[in-house]
Image: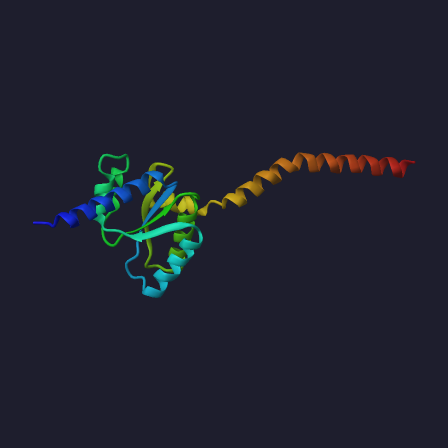
Length: 167
């Protein structure tokens, strides 16, 4: 029979996982089998610098955390060694870092995850990772907004130069 203390610790762990799943803007699940210690350390460092919480979790605990939530579809991908990256602020950061790392290290495989409360598969995670960063998107928007003003200024300048040349 299981020790009451162990059961309580597992229940607390399930509660923590469940709160992270619901409060994170994105969660990415990956299979890290085949990575050596140096590679995992480098990956953890990159994720930590981006403010992403990266943990190796037992599949059974994650399954229990998804019970009674909209995340039960995650149970299909919870096989083999599972590492989970939780991001509270930036929805793109864990997908981008893990996808870039997976390109350099074939051993890391993206399985899927949760983005903005919706369960997504590994293809959607990769598509999310290919999006430009928030700053990149903002700069693109700014350049689109500046284009009409820039074109108007060039037209006014051209008219002014034409009038000067005619005078």
